[in-house]
Length: 60
Image 1 (cartoon, rainbow, N blue to C red):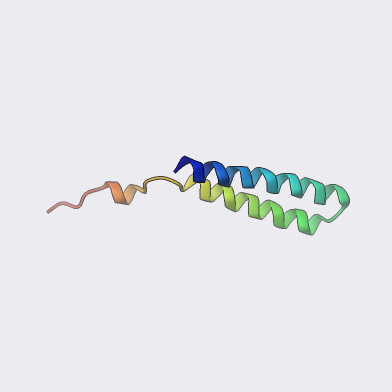
Image 2 (image 1 turned 120 degrees about the horizontal axis):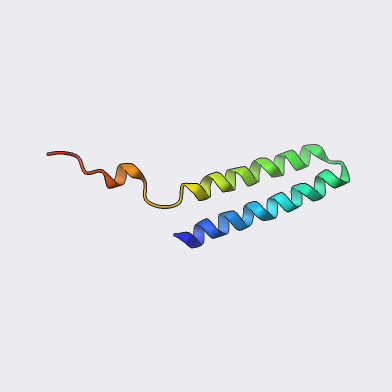
């Protein structure tokens, strides 16, 4: 599972780099879009792993 998390974080880092390049060339709109995509990757990376509800056993 950590490989999926690593891929998502690597994608986020790449998107941040692309956003920096776009911002430096003056395309702020494209930079903003790339930043939002990077944040989405970071959010998804944080969700990788077992979910709490799956660990709680219901009472019989």
